[in-house]
Image (cartoon, rainbow over all chains, first blue to last red; front, side, top):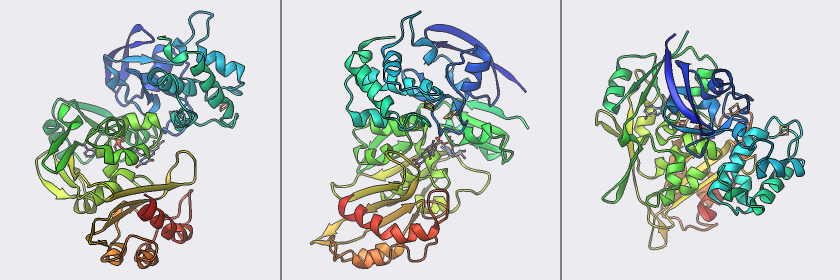
Length: 161
Length: 267
Ligand SMILES: Cc1cc2nc3c(=O)[nH]c(=O)nc-3n(C[C@H](O)[C@H](O)[C@H](O)COP(=O)(O)OP(=O)(O)OC[C@H]3O[C@@H](n4cnc5c(N)ncnc54)[C@H](O)[C@@H]3O)c2cc1C
Ligand code: FES
Ligand code: FES
């Protein structure tokens, strides 16, 4: 099996890895780069737990062929907190009890970040739409929606990181 | 069996790589093909990509619009020229899927997918392959799964006058879910009567299809509850909807007139 070199930035840091033909980005991030923040839920595009931002837009890393991210800029939940300072979205998730088992949280946070970066004051319907590709088996979604709306109010969308 | 990935600069080169190899599949956005790769699908062993900017372009041409096969649902939503397709693109998956899913891939999506294809079917869609050959979408779909597969370069559609094109997707999961039944309709009127209606469903058969019985029943009818009653009665004439995790065939048949009516009168 041939290996190809791929370079990209992840949360602002340059990364260079060898990827196998057919290897998906989630696998490369977790096993190749060691960023365990995107989660493997289904490998089929249905759960959204593997959501990362590619050039600022949400993508499912399990369905992204790794070699196609050559030269692109990726962000994952691993880059949200600044040291001990949580990102306002993470902080709101904590206050609203929006994470129970936490398995969906990484994908939810990236889907929410993509929304707030583009639209700092979303309506409730826009929040619901933004996380419509992400499944949560624990919370019933309401705390997640409340957390995102609360984070928006506290200016999460205006923060650049 | 391992997968090999071949990337070409032009769609012509990618097309020739596909034409000589029955075990090769083109990758658009990858939302379906990567599922197959992840699951170790043995029916293909080569994935072909094309970095051809033309595949990503939307171009007006007379009263038609040419949409590159690599145009994503998100690109459609960002295009003012394609505003009539916004409700259709918005009905496909969640935001991440829409950033990836292409128009070309939608033509090959199997049940229960194909919402965009249903819409294209009523918009007089012509499919153009990388070699330049064109065919009507309905004819293209008939031979769609024949190997080796061609590379779709673009589709072209007519821009509808306002109120002529209607689209409605019914699903059981809110706000987004797999289609129970998708209806696309083209209902031009002349002198208060429907003339030349085109109706297509997806998720009601193995692939999206035109519904001739409904189209015939709409000819000369008025676009109101009484006028469309014969069309509603013919909603599932000649079709046998599939049973899947979302609904049984029986259920789909029972509710088809309801969704058809909503599409025609409220869509
Ligand atoms: C979670 C999830 C939700 C989804 N929801 C919907 C939905 O609501 N509605 C819907 O319609 N679909 C849905 N889909 C299915 C799919 O995302 C779409 O149908 C999409 O448009 C497929 O496009 P793609 O570019 O990702 O296809 P790919 O995965 O790249 O390709 C799919 C097939 O098409 C072939 N192909 C792709 N492009 C070309 C081309 N230019 N020429 C020749 N062959 C080509 C490939 O070889 C492959 O066989 C969903 C999928 C997932 C995973
Ligand atoms: S792991 Fe990617 S969507 Fe579930
Ligand atoms: S918190 Fe458990 S899946 Fe969402």
